[in-house]
Length: 73
Image 1 (tube, one colour):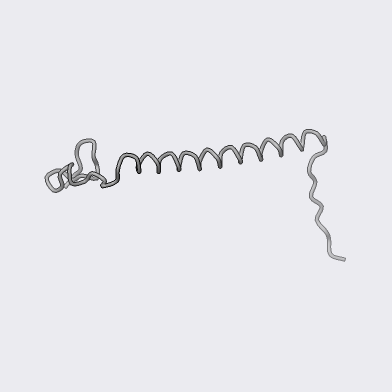
Image 2 (cartoon, helix red, strand yellow; image 1 turned 135 degrees about the horizontal axis):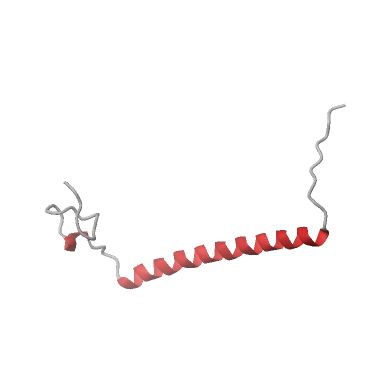
């Protein structure tokens, strides 16, 4: 068996396209899509804000970040 057409989850000759349609309403699908889009946008914006603050902070100080390790006595 192989999948054909534009619905790879619908196996030709086994399942009809009408049987593989989601029972969710269009408004529910759009709501979920917009929620995921909003979450990804928020995470991207917060990450970008954080990175820009880090870059701005390092450029203002003019000193490289140095990590000093303690040596045992």
